[in-house]
Length: 268
Image (cartoon, rainbow, N blue to C red; front, side):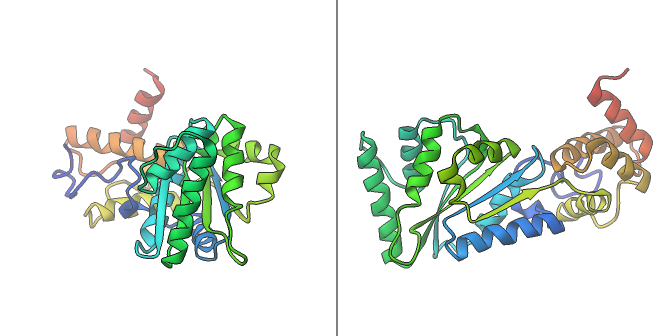
């Protein structure tokens, strides 16, 4: 609605995990480097944790974009509230496989065949489990551990990446056999004040804006309210742009941001 008014080619603050808008802060870069290393060096299992809304899902999509399709077959699991059988079926489905098998051994055999076929063809298999803290059944974590037993003499046949909130770390720590299999792990923090400003500028630039819209005071208030959480920054900036559009403002100042914050927290 407000894009043309602000000279934007598209909405800059959507919360969809579009890698085009991925902002590479030093922490996000470190997280991405570790995930890429885990995959390229076939480390078996890596884990990325972070608070809700800090950019983990967008980072996972940026990772997928950086992995060559001809070399990697990637299964992305985004709703991991399954029992162990459904988890195995969903993994096969996300790897492009139809599964008529009913028993767990049959499903595991099918997965092994997929992993080994990719290995013979010079491709690596990667399974990414997003929102992995939602796994309630410990049997699913056990299946993840068992998948890492699929190896040749010198390499894993699959790389598993677990991505989730800090609750994921607590769940994994209880399961020593799985915890010991995680080679690379990283906790992603929110943005500081400087990178909050850079994040806002980056997203506006990716949407076609060549000059600033938010004043320095507005950005400071955005950081103070959101504490640098990208999802909350997006929500606040999106509504601020809408309010500025309806008022035919030339820029978004502290007063407009304060007004939006009052609406968001329900203060009259």
